[in-house]
Image 1: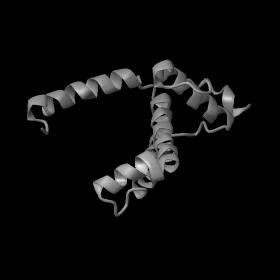
Image 2: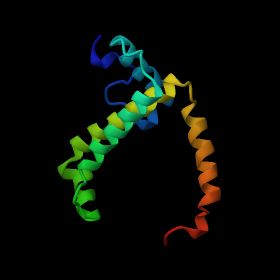
Image 3: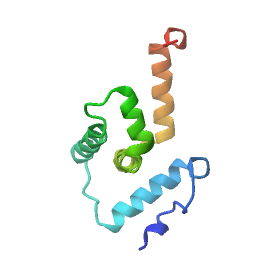
Image 4: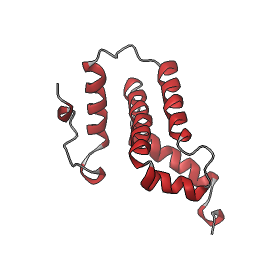
Amino acid sequence: MGHAEYRIPEGARDDAVTVQALREAVAQFNGDRGWTGLNAVNLAMSINIEASELLEIFQWCDPQEADEKARVTEREHFREELADVLIYCISMANFYDVDVAECIREKMRKNAMKYPAEHGAK
């Protein structure tokens, strides 16, 4: 199956693609490769490994250099590593049937109580 057939139309952006479409695309991609033996340990390790690869882009950078890398000089590499992290997170949500929107909404609600906006940086 070709890469364009993973339910994410070429040129589609966040405002046109649902979380469900991303979940289906990741599930199809994994299924097509027989990657059905996933589990919490493998997925969590993979998230961590890919997050470390993302972090490595910024190793020894000050905040201004890191911003320049993410936006310009290492943009493609940054996007690829970020995508890897997101793909593994979606894979874990799929495997454990976690509703991503609900999960994020509930956690943001808890974070709002823990970190009230009036105490934020100014």
